[in-house]
Length: 125
Image 1 (cartoon, rainbow, N blue to C red):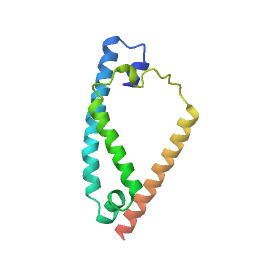
Image 2: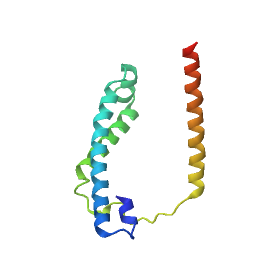
Image 3: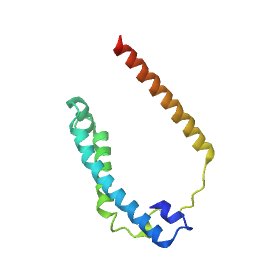
């Protein structure tokens, strides 16, 4: 949605189609995420479930704030005027942060590869 508003060089029909696709994608993925999130929450053992629902008031409060915000975003995404959405932000690239992200991402991939190789070798023995 944001990209369609930033790219002024695109044809108007393309920008409108991109915007509608982004809005619809957000709606569907957030709705799925709500259902998967509840399934994931209730699939935990009682000890972990109670940390978020019974024993920890802060955890319970934060969990329900997030659930309410997700439901509000799904309900109102189709009704929110475009002027209230993040459409007037100027996007400038920050290459330093991107390079740091890429270095950390490569380090993560190396670590995962090393872990998988170690587990495979241990299983094979």
